[in-house]
Length: 325
Image (cartoon, rainbow, N blue to C red):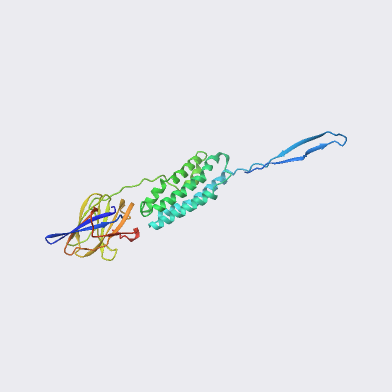
């Protein structure tokens, strides 16, 4: 549903009363040292000839880490990031998802700065050289997804899917693959917590499917816009749902059996309806009409497409301010 003017009409007795509704849219070593023996002069007491000999010594190269020590360093990285990632998986609210992703971003950046070994085994020099960059990119991707929470992604599942497809996640998997070519245990030690990319889902209910039934004489006909929506009636001044219905994009339906009373109307729009969570997982928007709806002696029509002129406004809501259907 987009910003614009939408209309509603009311049927009362034998005549119709038309109104218009305004709707808003619902993340170096090695310094060699040279020594010379005065430039190493040797001289014979009885001779005027002298010979200069330059003697140079070098510090030894640092010893590379053992394979076992390197594997432990990779395990330490995943030991830091794995719990952060799991917190995203289990988060139950948008704020919790955002908080988990923000911590993941901060920890990945700290590991990029100070957690990558400087002296890996020779066979691992190439992939290890890419590890710091991969962790920095992972940090950026986690931060980007965190900023998308509440609009582009609306649940932990959709945030997780977006993050697993990100450039940062792809880069860390690529480093793990390079490490695997030397020893499969290295790749698992680094990125075993990170799943394969997760595709978005596009689940829908049938047009007109009633989510919450009620009983009464009233009805509400809904002409929807270009995004799937759930229309919910609540007791006036509360978020207690009384009746709700699913309307597919560009479709029309009628919700019947509405009690003869006065209600508030909320509209939730988005993509991919998660029936278990009772919410859209992506592109979610939330609004509430500023006027009440009296079904005691009237039936209504609500049109969620843009109209010219309007006399009924709506207010955008934060996700936590919208009722469950």
